[in-house]
Structure formats: structure tokens, C-alpha cells
Length: 97
Image 1 (cartoon, rainbow, N blue to C red):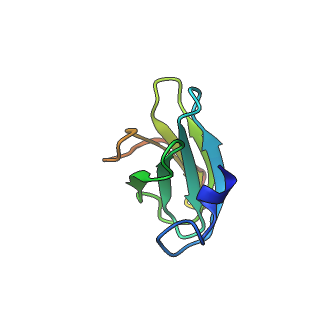
Image 2: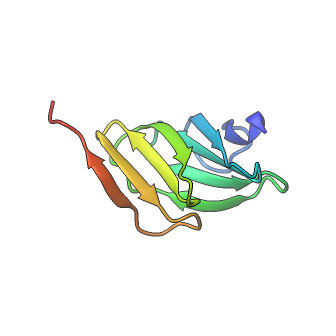
Image 3: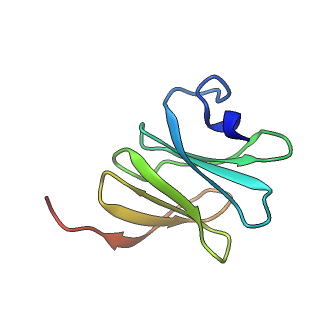
């Protein structure tokens, strides 16, 4: 499971640093310093979705109770994305610097 977030496992550039496992333990979400997050299938190791709405590094990922993927990052926002990808909703826009 941990290897899915490692650069050698992922077919894309970027350093995958932050991860969360879904409550049914069938999906893994990984956040990256390149501003993207990806959703992986735990059984296959295949990428399910790409989330690239952050404008800076992603420092936190989590699953909401309804199954959506939450990301938070350097752009001081928390975004809620559909589990299969698509447009994210900004839940929180942080304070200016």
C-alpha cells in the first residue's frame, strides 16, 4: 500500500508524500508537492482519478463521510472533489499571508 505513493510506483513526476485510506479500505488517496492528488485502487494499484485543482503543494488528504476526497495545501484552501475526479468545491479559503 505505501508503495503506491512512491514516485517509482507512480507513472508521473512529483513526490507523493501524503496519503489516506478510504473507510472501506479499497482506495488510497495521495497528495503531492506538485499540486496534484491521485486516487488509487487498493486491489489493483491502478490510478482511478486525478485531482489537480490546487495551485500549490498538497499537504493533507482525507476522505469525507460521503466518499468525496478532501485536499488541503499551500494555497490555503480545502477542496472537496468527487471520488471519480471532476470539479472541486472550495470548502475553505484561508487567511491571506
